[in-house]
Image (cartoon, rainbow, N blue to C red; front, side, top):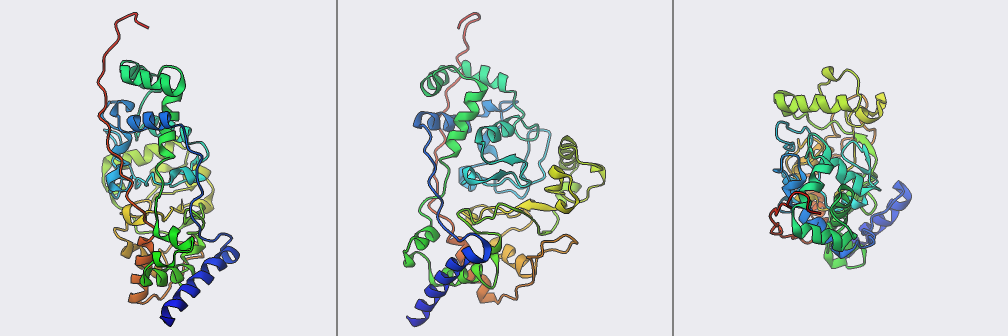
Length: 362
């Protein structure tokens, strides 16, 4: 009993100390102003509708499937037909809380509709023409009715992306053990998870970058995880890689032998190989891990950090060998699993069919 009380006390001290040591403690997610229910329902239909893609065969849930933690469960995402993507598809869980979006942070997190627009129109994702998909939805009476009820008018591209953004705001963590613990329910974490929390905030140093409500500092760091050779060994994926960085205006793309990360956006030498710190919320549902999916399990992730990360000149100075014991590694993994809440079950709607309007019909 005394040992258990000491674990609780130590963890509580470390959680409190994090605010002083690293600027932010750990705390539950703040509430989001709820979007209009009608727009959420419409956005849900659109999220699962492949008519929002160029070829009518790819929907948002192709790469962000509720059954695989709102990602796709693959190391590297499958792109739009004719392409293969070169990064891991991040979960959409809690996407509304990020300051920057994508692994390289190239888009603001404060404008979800624009993020949706980018996903729909990006050649490697869904390659849609906003004018075309609006016209498609005008040929579906149920959609026309829903748009009038939600926005007071017929389908337009702006209304489409706003509706999907409203739905994204509802994809959030729920009933998470760590949140209950931080709110005073000391029974919410097992003994092993509490030991892992103490390591997370102390010896393992995880909270240096994984802090705040998202368990992310939302900054960019060079870790130098193992390379995923499929990016360069698969010709189609390599072509997609090169084309993407050329569209960003990155120089000497043909010479890249690794993903430059943030550098592709900023063109600043010191940003080479830096990627945004991902949220650890729901992390047990979102394997494989890292920007290139090179670490298959949470155990692999802990082992990587225990070694002090990768080896490269601009590697983050925060990464150093940790010297964790086998028991400490197990406790840390147990704590990471406590960051996962109840499954967010969303049933795919039965989508309505086209009923084309007659020529000249309004």
